[in-house]
Image (cartoon, rainbow, N blue to C red; front, side):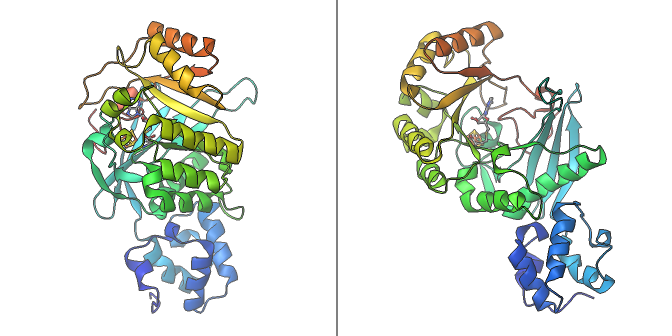
Length: 362
Ligand code: SAH
Ligand code: SF4
């Protein structure tokens, strides 16, 4: 029997992952259950990754029955694809209203220093995206809706559960899937805070990376909150004319404003900023562009993460080849800006940066 519910909204629109511990405690109070049960449920969710009430075997059956509605299929994994090297898995999830999102797990070989391989999970914060960056498949599909904090968390719990079966854990979470996290600021931060909870999943703030297209007021707010989460900024161009042709948001927030906000962030937090750069042949990959970029970034605690453009259906530009990429990196480094050229991951299953469109086409 489902309990009489004062918190009707929880049953209709919310998932269990949308609740924080105090919400859960309040709900149990409404159900006339002792408060310590909230902690037990919390640990079941975030330490054991239980996904159905039956798995909470230490709880009385009557309470498990009351919990039924809270597990009302938050996100449904519809299908997954593994890359041919077996190192990348993309999962497509259907939300309750039929929207689809994707999350990608990337496994890396053990590094010589720690002997452990990173397990980096890339998650979505919105279905679609309103920012319309021309080379991004998510941008090409337009904005559908924000994800709730619980829908963001559910992607992590799904993979955490899967990795647990292989005696592995997620080591890094990047908010670089579908959507612009700073356009859905509150839900994104709530999700991070909940995943960070020392009594729950305990995922360290420094192991999260948020990537933003450069929403200046939100970068400043993020800086004021002095979070330990890593910040990455999608820059892709060293002058406004070029940037606006790729990233329409640059009409509103110019490169100078973005860099100023980053300077503020660094001053507030002492943390290094990453600038992301999709290398596009003949567009933003010459040593001259690298020099211009270096002069803009001079004196900033930062580095540049460059990745040859991934192909998407709606954009004609081509990826920079290895040789040109190396020259770009060299020019930046000679001008004093550290740069890494990132490996492409999951391209054969359209799981690379900017390729997530909620449709599996291979
Ligand atoms: N909305 C956020 C995070 C999601 S996109 C942002 O834009 O930062 C994650 C990264 O992929 C961003 O740096 C984005 O610019 C980049 N990206 C988008 N399309 C790409 C493509 N086709 N090839 C390579 N990188 C791409
Ligand atoms: Fe949105 Fe980021 Fe894609 Fe731009 S690159 S459309 S901000 S997801």
